[in-house]
Image (tube, rainbow, N blue to C red; front, side):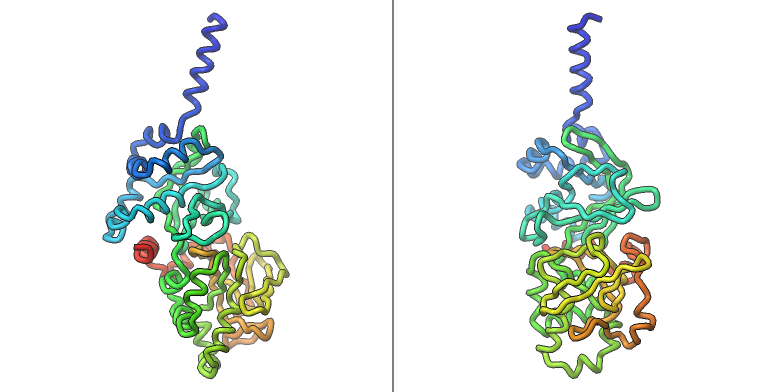
Length: 347
């Protein structure tokens, strides 16, 4: 072969290897719904086509069909703002091959920055975790999306094909109600803190269970609205999204009421003062929620749940990245219909 012919052959081979995102999506018949949905937003499609260093989580046709088969999902197809937010939430800033996603979990920023749907600085996060020989992504309400085909390369990054559409995180109130944390939701309403926790940017909420509130029901009944509000504010960290992977042992963090809470990491578990985190990293529109088994007390480093600090409540929680804090725990907390949750909230 002559040198000129060899150069042309190599150039052609290089061009074939550097596929565009559009070519990759159109080349997979199981991604035709994603392709047609993206085509409704030419500016987004153009931006993705020229972007570099991104990871696209690509739901299959079956995943979209499962979403659009519900009444609220069908309605979402006509909600341009929501549909675009859903697509943006499936694009991660940065290239993350499957091998780079840790077993402890990683919270990575997405292109979803629209303030109508998120209030997290740098873009709403999605959690990726390597487990059971594969990769799973957790989105709003701990909804799970498993990677069925990883590391499909294109000239701007990689694509992971997933088996369900990510859930755009809803606000704290809607998430608490869906998770069965009805006492917390009611208390926030009674103390006029509902709007505060829903709109504050970059927050962390430690959310006691109904059982935790019931354990100190007689005490709560004697509190004034202002005192109850102070206790609830002690469960909110403002200005810091404390994902489990960013918490450090022994750190103290100021809360909305001015007092601090202490984080303890021991035996693979997380404690806030003396409360145990039972479900970690529930993503919400403006930050993250950790469910805890007792109510925090602003005036002490202990927590109230009807037991002594050395009793059952002092046992460490499962590791944040372990199966015990993943979807089965959320199911037990009655996180029913995650897709219906965000669709009902945003529609």
